[in-house]
Image (cartoon, rainbow, N blue to C red; front, side):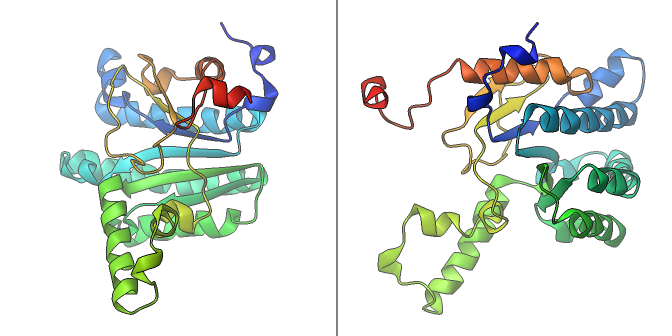
Length: 249
């Protein structure tokens, strides 16, 4: 077991992104339906937010619902939307009281009016909070985000807002939703449930993130598991294309 004292305070990842996977399989193991697993997953979200505040993480991005998830069984999708709304309406005051700022990325136009309004209310009420920024990726897909950014980018080129000769990675990245919300790229990406895929999540932004995979299903993920992931992260050398010798200099 990893304890808080085992964590180096100077190298805590500023931004942790999590692909929360395994709710359905967890529920099946309990003899319950998939929605029960999603409900328990929400409890894990609460605990993870609290743990990040305690540890000193500044940004937490959670992959809540992908663009591909719209293809799931309509009853499950409907139940998930109701669960999201339940979260907004029951957790807004609690998140605000605990100084948590909430932001959202994704194609929110696909959400119902009630769901979108609930999210917007949560964002508006918590926008000035500073303890932790929680980024909810809802109706999100990285290919969608990059395509959406490319359309805006092309429009600005056509309208001569941008000189094509000045284009570089930084300029293009400024069109991504995360950059427009002043969200830094993740330092650490965690995926639960023993799956080794990125699943269309923050593909541009995780170019140099450290990746951590665990076989723990999301409802069983807790502060101990988070500390384990951070401890593993702190044992790595982040070179960003440089050699070890260059980092020592």
